[in-house]
Length: 139
Image 1 (tube, rainbow, N blue to C red):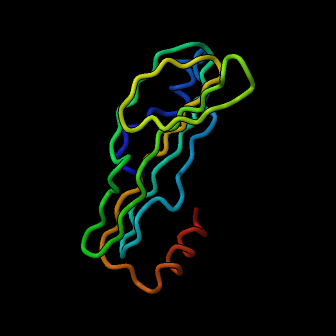
Image 2 (image 1 turned 90 degrees about the horizontal axis):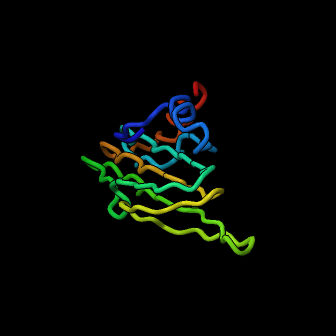
């Protein structure tokens, strides 16, 4: 995972049980950069709001990739999306929030936070796919 402070899902749901539903909390597979030592994958968090709230987001690496070192490849940039229901119709809009924003959400609105993957370290080897396959057997 990236260098991210993450509240445990159980604590989030308990603290905000009437306000927020955690719809997804997963690894963002493939977001880490290739390298002799692959960059860590980011995470995906999707939150649905059960009441109107003001929400602020403060994040980094939404424009510039986390860089690889010593021949390693860059990690994927992050992404913050607001999935907003139109109050007067069934239409849904997806809005890119950028890295820093404050918004007022309505009931049923969602935010999807995709954290960036870490940059890889060292020149990737030809057997990287074999190593990834071997590691995935244990996950």
